[in-house]
Image: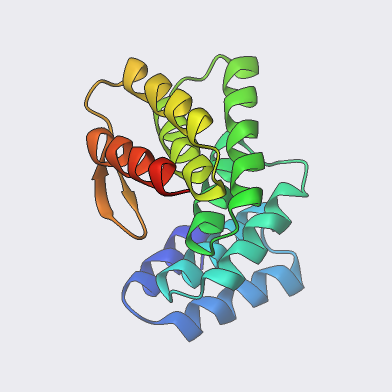
Length: 167
């Protein structure tokens, strides 16, 4: 069974079978470890076991084959786990790697999430700066944020301003 098939059976709710297949790949060296860890993290995310998903995402970042998307997905898991310091570091890695590799696909999303993370960390001026950067890249940007659901830039801006007034 390949990694896509494992993800597909997990989407169908066969989590234990998917995890068993991941373990089989890891123990037998059937697939590169980074690919298995990505797939297993995906399975854990579908199971809403975000701690284990984050643990696997962290393990991926320790491997040499990680990519910009791995930092982004690790940050996303960290946000769900309310590990905002980790999310900040990994999102900054996304910005750095995007610049180094000339890849702009993640820029708006990374800046948007950095705005949210900075708000949660109490760094309101920086939150506004990151949000402004996200809006410069994509004027009508919005993203799913755990406590808000789908969150527009205007909603996030009003939340940052609200938090800054009360703290």
